Length: 220
Image (cartoon, rainbow, N blue to C red; front, side, top):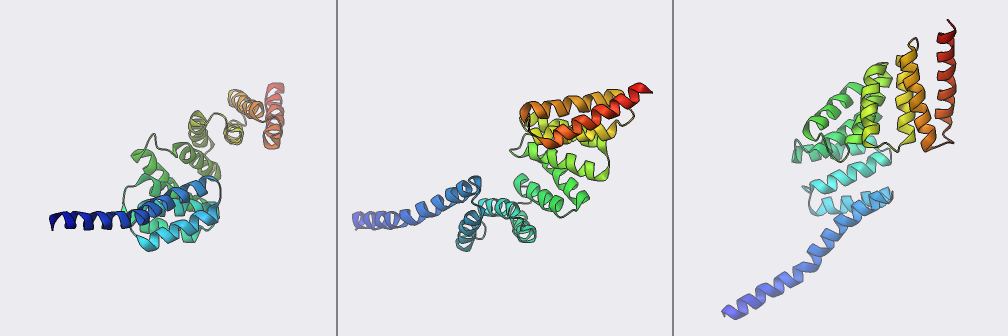
């Protein structure tokens, strides 16, 4: 009888293995689909996973990332709130809430979420994006020196991003309209952007504009 019991249990485990394996594979597929920018496919997989297990935090995270990439912010917000109910201090969910707030124009809410992310995960996997978003929010608010600090941190983490160097240069340009040193710093940031991407039109226009502003101050 004992041998039969073990055999029966083994059969149960054997029969369950394909189901467990398929579920785990779906989780991996959802993340892979997201990374391949197949966002609709990732959404479908994650929703399927959540029907099986509504408490699957990983599915909430990948689903929210995918929905944000599709611009479906209200839907992402619903799942992000569910995710936060599952794990109040998960930094990924907090960063997601910050992104949603940013894209919906809720600057102060976004700042609070992003600052909470920095406190919880100062070396987190999306720390570069968080500092970039903080910089963009400060630009929206006209707080260009604060934007300079945040965007300087963003390019520290991702030095090869021409677009971010251009936004850093723009923040410095606007912070230093009457300050030769700050304009020179802006010029250097625009030049760095063009070293990374010589065809980047925003950087070329910004560089020309800032050189003219610096020349005007020098002439005075």
